[in-house]
Length: 590
Ligand SMILES: [Zn+2]
Image (tube, rainbow, N blue to C red; front, top):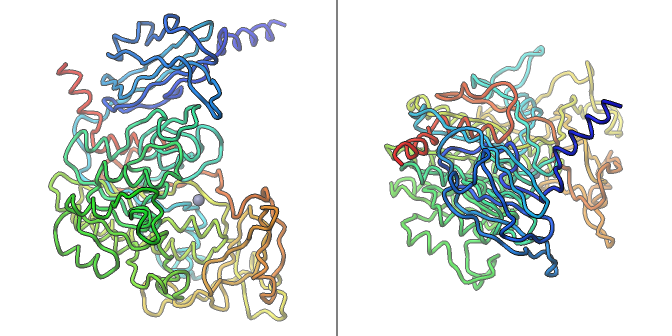
């Protein structure tokens, strides 16, 4: 009985008389000292402005926040529905590190959150950071890429990946504020802002109003760098440059699909180096192929701002020679083709965009240009299609992308040899349910492909060859190859063989808007039908909730250890650059 009463007392304490709908930043938010963010409190139903009370560590908020909150009598939801009152304060900064308990009450509702405002080292540990992100980089990607690229003899790898020799490591939790599961928006946003957020959100907390561009903002690393110093910024991706991961370096929106607006956000921040796909969102709607709904010509705007434009491998090489320091490289209207298609098979859209640079070309050009700034730089490099090919259950393409990613890591390590003041971080944003389970051996008798899967001792070893020594297997379909499987999927046909005609499309939509097995693979010899195990409105494999492995080397890398939340990673980056030092200094000066 006593226990029950105690439990009830605790519950009442937590919820209070009646809970306000939400306070942003959320409870347990970690906030870089001196970094601007928006404060918002939402009430359930309408309240009177004179009843609103906001305290910070028990005192009236104005003394700490230094500004008055704006009162919103009633926020509107879908179909003009009243959502309730709110208070909002944009661009708040807290310069003094410490614990801030913020309590908000009005009309019988109350709620509190506690924020951890953190400072950083007073002086930078690193001059440069190269943040290499393998989208969806699962442990199986590392294992598979190592075997495919280097081979294995008697159980020992015949060589090491560039990412195998980074000396610090951590397990990273990837969950979002609204689910244990996650997407590339909220995950990368946590890395780039230090704040976890909701699925599909970038650089904002997801509030209750439907508009995607008005949500409470937090500062991105690019903005922090612009605010605190003169470092250069580079964003490189094999995806559309407006895709969630590269967008997270600069963007603020509840909806990662706001790609036209995200281009504008790139323009606001103007990273010196922008290389990737996605030109369709840079072109005015009057241009064929444009995906904009307005007449803004961002290619012209960037050119007017001093950028050299590159549109293929050759013009990128030419731009590298110009030393303008600013390059906008857009090599595809959408996502760039994957390395397997670009290098070997010439499938996908390679016919249409035959001269795309690879991730390594882009990384080297970015490093060459950015390192001309004596103040240093932050470079984000994303291998986007490790994830995109895993979504399609195209294990071979995902692994081949991982090899390319690893070569970009190699380029970063090569750079760090002559620039030891460089912190290199190699990680993924979330995992996939990918596993390497053994081999597939075509030499086994019969036509039943399932019986050619070798597990345990039957797996033996693969026979990929790399005669030209470029690190990529010369053939993706040797007679004994990796068996790669996924743990969740739509209905599909398992063919047990690499897709030589272009990326795998396991499921297609039927009249009922459900995804069903793509009949194109039905008659592949030995193919078997696999019943899906996720809801039928999903076209592809979903992300896994499993931890990501992060590896790092260079000054500041010692901060990566044990288990960290993605938002904690920002803290290590901010510390390496001493981004909280100027905030603290500012506080002293005031
Ligand atoms: Zn994904």
